[in-house]
Length: 186
Image (cartoon, rainbow, N blue to C red):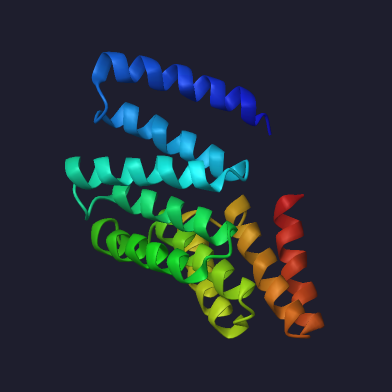
């Protein structure tokens, strides 16, 4: 999308929040998180990690290690690491995020499903298709129950399941999953 415009808006908001609330306020930290996320989407991984690590340090200090916001940041760092192909480090961050989410918000939450989905992506990129399928199935079950069968995130998971099946040479099954995803998207 319009990354430069988004960055400009995040920087403006961050400046205001910093001035009014200070560096550790939720609004300031939230804007820093979004800023780091956009940097990652732009492929500016070093800058993204620096920003997200700063957010993580503030969150651990203010809301604690076991807070859902801290889990979200661990997850965000995992995404950036996965984009760089740093699988082991990404998995460590996803696992921390998942452990916190399971304790704080529980299994049946879309955010927990999102982390299972990302772990599936990690395994899929490594060619570990059985492990990827297990994670996608976990994500899909939660998404179906919490978001519904017609949600875009559910469609994305069907698509990735189709991709895994395709990579395994299970073409007929793959087509069925791709059709499910397409039906939701149309």
